[in-house]
Length: 207
Image (cartoon, rainbow, N blue to C red; front, top):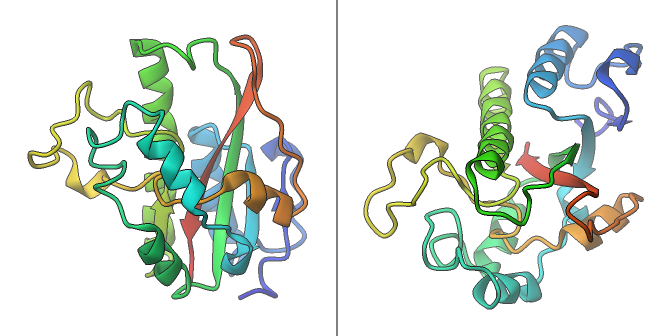
């Protein structure tokens, strides 16, 4: 598998090279690229799960400083523990890191415009995970970007209204995305103002 996906894309889809297959063949590649484009995903990077960093401090940030803690099915403590995250990653060797860049002036505001963006990111990851599963990657499992916003108010701790789309976010899986990006040679820059462009990341554990 590692020899079949030597690529890392961070360019507009129209300019991506087509001389090497991203997955098993160019036809499968095209199906995934089309889905990525539809959901606003601009970069796809094949990575080894050994490059993914799990850290306790990420869980600490979730517990102290985020108002989604203990209020959402896709956030701690409803998601896996740090130890479980490390054990799950050991069952995989490869993953896809998906990225997109947006101008998001509503990022720090709890309003409907922000929620629409969150839902778009979320559904994109789940849709690509499903497509990969249908293409034969039966272990495919998505870790989404940002917190879940499928419901205006989460039903937690009552039953989730969208159990088939329920996924942990990258952060709730205790993944240090900054260190992970450094491991694959990607620059990290924090958006500091509401007018700044910022990048969002999700991960699909592959096989």
